[in-house]
Length: 373
Image (tube, rainbow, N blue to C red; front, side, top):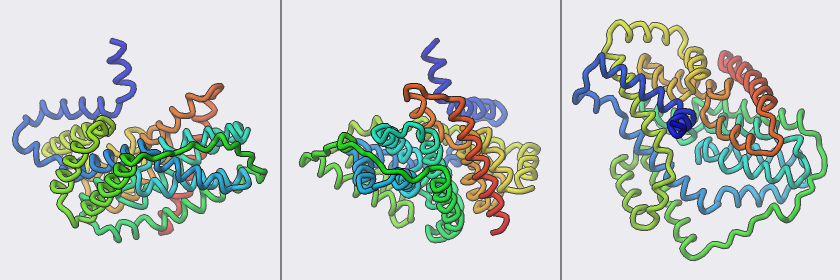
């Protein structure tokens, strides 16, 4: 019983997605049409990226880059800017989840060695914002972008052009936040902060292999390689050379997508409900997707809203901005919260309060910026 409670607590979005999909199956009987609901291209690319990023993580690629950059900084403000910048720029390519899993623990160690534990909450909150905001620039940055990019049949250049003004605005806000809230002071970094990464010949081969799978994923995203061919090639390579990595991907996210696809597909076949949702979402796609994201997170909000409007670019903007706000608006935010909660003396209430204040202020500014655009 305890294991069931633990599973539900950790996979609440998956459980809700399963329940709503199951309920919809009693209204629309399962049939061959169900297969048409599922976006296999998005699921394939997600799995390809999750496998590749798990490989890079195990080889400590991102942390090594972070340590090299932090070691070059002479002030604590410079260290914090680098830590936040790492989350912001890396999330564009390695996803916001992986960026936070990599750099939040590293930041905790760095700040501890620098004797700046007073900056834990501010830095982690700003890193979370940086990962969520940086990830909005590319289809690779987060799951909903990948899905919406595929659904809209956009070119990569068009997607980046759509989100670039928001990314620039976000970068300016993050820099200003560091300048305002982190006073200039010398950074005292111990040599203990540096890990020794000795790569064996096998590690080097694995690194080259995952660079290849990442390039392959990019080719699939760019529609230069069919998704089923790219997925097949990557699976064969990984099964032959590094099959243990197949345990690492977040399969619950893939299942969540499938259940949501089934739910939305069935709802669209119920005329009254479909018409109501379509009229509601079309009032203002950006605002509706932002509000929904606060309660069900931006991935389910993206799938739900995209089913009832053809103006996908507005849903892209809304769900990316909607990742700010509450702690569950972007599920990636829970990763950094959990990492913070492991610290001795951590104050969850203080963290949530500061997180919420920063996020609401950022959301208001970014929303006003979207009206100007």
